[in-house]
Image (cartoon, rainbow, N blue to C red; front, top):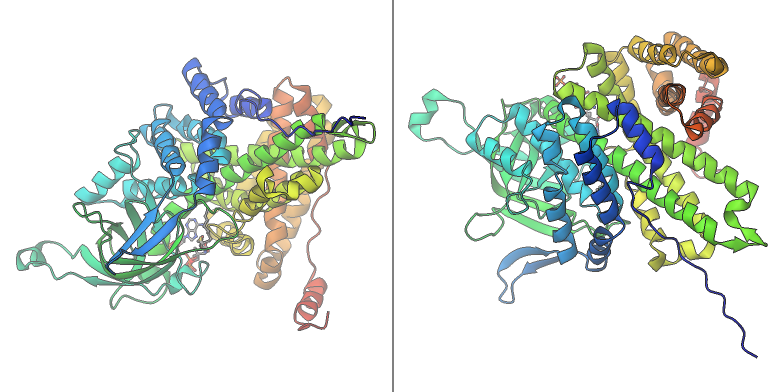
Length: 570
Ligand code: MFK
């Protein structure tokens, strides 16, 4: 007797642009019209490649991990970092498809960043984290555009924003040191001035330095340039005493590092195709970018852009996890019917898809403001809102992607736990998002800094109320009321407690999620009320009536102190 062997079909990936109807409607919502034909073709192409050749290159990059060769056979220091062809192809593709240049050509005016981030959204999940060097490159380009004042800064800017693979450079961001990545103001790297020739002394302050110190997390060590923080010898302590420097990593002729030694590549939980290194700066030549000082403020330009990338890539990873899980749900037969037909699975997926859709709206709203701000078409309130929303987007999407990746992996049962299905990698990679460019708690404290200094809470209130007004149709009255009530409760809490630093900071995470929730609901509502899609209406109803936050009271805080300090007792 021949037993017919059961074969489970794996999930399949279709064109990632054409099949993502919610994303397409969201783009129209923010662009206020469908993308033109030329853009539709570009997005279609990247969507197609994301399920084809990009995926193959990414798999190659993951299999042939970066290798550090510290010495040549004769003992001479080399510090070569060998990368796979797949990785290099992904770099070239990113340049040629305008993943960077679109943001700087600004052909679409304020909407240019929306188009650029749409490309990133499609590219990232099949990019083996080439998206990480792109994030830093974009941030560095913007910092050089604002602060760069030397011919070499302008030249680097041209390369960083080029759409020609043979001209395109990437940039590192050298910030984190052994003392950690959070308290940047404690950075210990020193910048020693290179004594200028006597003729220059009288005319301008010194610009050429040598850097000495250790940078502890330098992703993309294969980049051509990096922006680094260092303290000019004798400058004051803290973030204001730091300055921003441009480093050209390699000697133009020999291709060797310029007074840089790679200690080792990091052995990371995920993002293993990405060459993240520990490096020693041993008198590395560097030029000062802008005036001396205010390094943290200057590098904030860079890390804010990386945080936007982080948020877009988080949502893109959620999409990848969920589109695979959805496809699999239709193929997988269990207890007599398709997995997708089981009510509990449907509810589980609905929660995840709603979370992903909300996150997508929130980050693209952030991107909309970013594009307006950069092209000087934002109002003062919009620029202030952007400052807060970048941090909120990073906090909330970084947390959500971990949950979504974990749940989506579970949809596959034991298969999701097997390495070559790709799910373990997706899960490991997801964990970088809440850490890369600032942890959840550090950024939650940044939310306090934002509402105290830069984004008065009234700006959030006004943005929500304006949006609710635009979603004014009668059939949405109960959703509007639900959002208004949530906003009123939060406003009351904010007015009562925002000056109590200890209580506010203990509640910072909950507060960040609550503000994000309210803004997201208002976006869902406007999109549903002004559009025609039944799915969007269902999503809006589900999201708008979801539960809201319960802040910690002073009594809870006292209990939290006791519990958290119990030193192993619990
Ligand atoms: C895919 C990758 C895989 C590789 C693995 C990665 C593993 C992770 C490796 C890392 O370490 S990533 C780096 C993570 N670190 C960060 O992202 C930094 C986190 N810390 C913060 O964000 C702190 O809030 C901050 C360092 C900014 C606090 O520093 P300070 O010196 O206490 O800030 P301060 O005095 O409040 O602000 C200094 C200036 O910066 C002010 O401007 P002024 O100089 O004009 O007064 C602020 O307005 C400005 N500023 C601070 N935060 C800002 C900002 N401006 C805009 N946006 C912000 N968010």
